[in-house]
Amino acid sequence: SSVNGQGDQIGEIVALKKIHMDNEREG
Image (cartoon, rainbow, N blue to C red; front, side, top):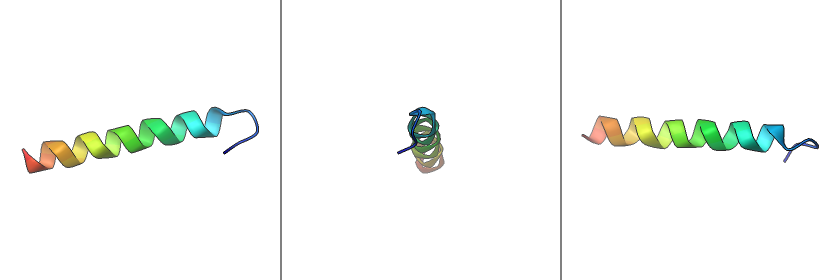
């Protein structure tokens, strides 16, 4: 976690993008 919470938000977005890319790859 980051002090201002921005790091957590970015981390969540990156995780969601990774999951989406994995799903696209499985097709």
